[in-house]
Image (cartoon, rainbow, N blue to C red):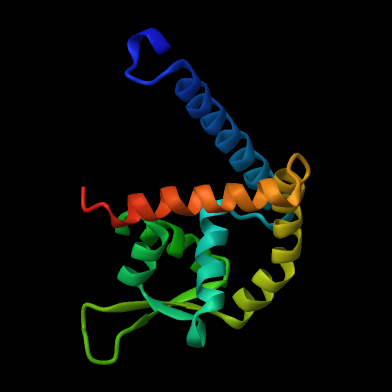
Length: 154
């Protein structure tokens, strides 16, 4: 693969390791959430984001922006979570086209119940192979990549 790439062999190896780790981490988190909560990772992230904001509500567009999710995909997930009684849609009081996603009381209880196991799974996956310094370095590197991508207008 390196012979067809402008990346060095070391860079190709780092990229392949990153992709492999990401895939396996996502599979483990998805497995935990499906088995213990009956939701996907993307659905849990919606619930968790709503849990952390005032009144547990966000405009749908703002929620899509925070999750880096297309509106149509977010709409589908909100519909599913509403069917489970975990969220509801509310009309904006002054903007007829504006909708809020609102975490219900049942949704708050759900997030509070599921989060310890979710973070326990993340901790087991991420902290087991790394010491504190390595984990801090991973956080720093991930933050640099995230900021670069978030701030890049392209």
